[in-house]
Length: 373
Image (cartoon, rainbow, N blue to C red; front, side):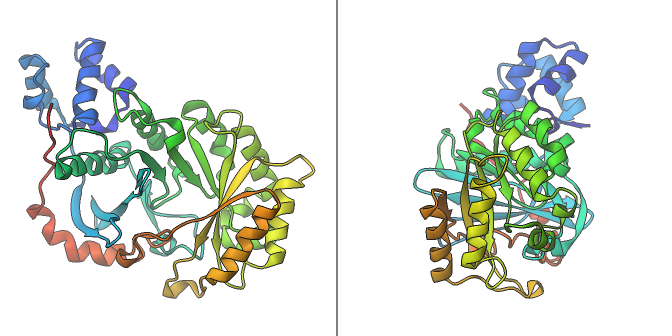
């Protein structure tokens, strides 16, 4: 049976047309699924009954089973979703004064192996499907609407910064992004959807041509020698190649700059010399400056890393040095660390927690209870 969460609008149109339905019927169906969060075809009141009956026989809107939910004191929510065979993924909702962001996973585990990221220590199991990527947004958006008693959009921003390297799962990622951006789906602005990558340079152009959303690059080091250690994919795509790809992507990006993410590691990459090397890298490069901003990320320690978080004073001094050079620099506010939902903490012990929570699956509802207009 086909899971309709696996389709962007064009894919759904093709599937519906193959079943003898007109294009506008697919648009109606897409709106019911994504705008209203309805998975029960019998509730889709403007679809003809024979079409609803046919859908019930051949299709489903199948969400992920929720293994657990944790609510932080700061309003952050983390869901642990079952994706089968003892595997699970995590999705994090981060409310702020001017936005509400959902951090979405793209893979079960991660193959990049950055030593400061606990997800990498889980290892890599597999790519997520489009349905599994979109189901995270579908569940979070419509569950939160129901809890808040509203039909208005709750999630304003999506960041592909959860488990996995998104650009190593392009086949599933692109249709998911299309659904997020589609006015008949979630209607998110390209400026409000961000793909974070460790630097899979070979996929930059494909993303730019198909779904040119905002791009965030996990930089974490100002030179190849250090980045080879901290971001192993740098050995395949060194900094010169990465920066050239970043410049090319800006021709298609929704903003006139991209974001470099930089995890602050005590005694590893946080000295004044490292800051100056970053300034030289992006502003004084022979090929010209890279329009960018820096997002400094306080490291969230875990035992296997053997690393420590830079002090608040060191992070401040590092940020001020970049700012004095004319680089827009922010320090990411740590959110959800009381529920292990902060950056770099996702799924460090997810397999253990999956086993603990598997018994809860049958007790969970199969879908949120949406508010239907």
